[in-house]
Image (cartoon, rainbow, N blue to C red; front, side):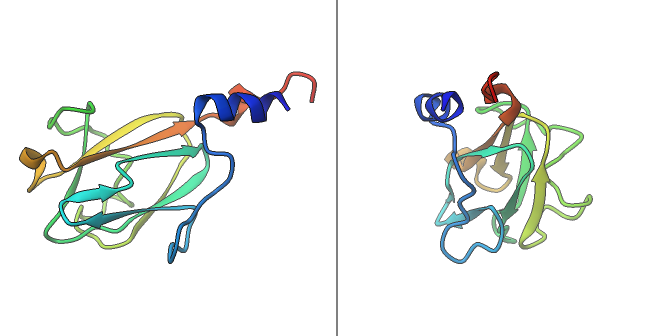
Length: 126
């Protein structure tokens, strides 16, 4: 019960939500010149599918407002090109991952994935 209460109060996802037409836990899509959703909250161990486009190559960056590339880049699938369509990755390390569209960063086309550690919210009486 404490896990449920903490998750609700903090706005943390309670279940995997693939959305319509998403074959994995979560999908990040391009809608116009924005990523949808702009911020994705997931549990460690869930899979995210980035539906890239050649017109919107993705680059992981160091901060929410930055444009400096972050390396190593856990948002790339097996070091594939950033324009590889439908890249699926499983994020296992809690933290915040920020990314931009290389071409449209000046238009603030950016997004983030926040990965939560479910062990931090486990009820000590379980």
